Image (cartoon, rainbow, N blue to C red; front, side, top):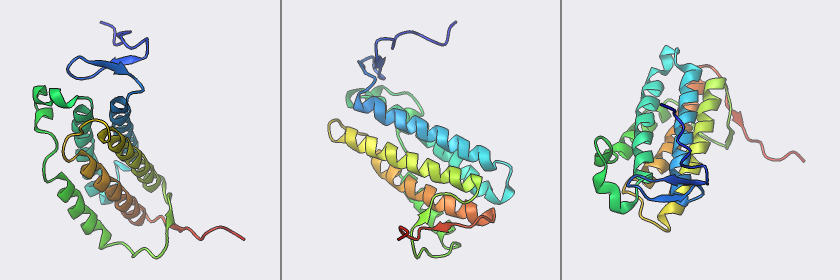
Length: 191
């Protein structure tokens, strides 16, 4: 059996429930951005998977990847078809998911130097990969917000994506600290 279907060769794709829309549709863009986020998180995990000091970050990212599959399914499903999703997608995101992210943010942040200026994304390879995932997370959030302006978006998705970008920012800082890579403060434009 071939993995390709040729069904989208004319520039359209199927949503959950059978409706076909152009691949440029806001709903397709939103779940596509979440898929890209999931891939960026996978690349970040690969950058430090064998670092025992970063086990809590790796475990959090693994859970977030699972959450991204749920979010992708929710965004790929028109509101009138959400009731037809099967487990685990039918339950949506756990109601406590944003709070869980906040708790982890707070735990890592209390071990980090307070920010006195903007920092440039970077540090070591692992920290830079998490910073990149943060930027992709912000783009996914913007796509979900754009979709929500014209069609319903399931409850909790936008809140989760908003909190996730902060989680990834603090996680990048924590990763850089734990791996001994300094952050680069933004010093403004040179005159």
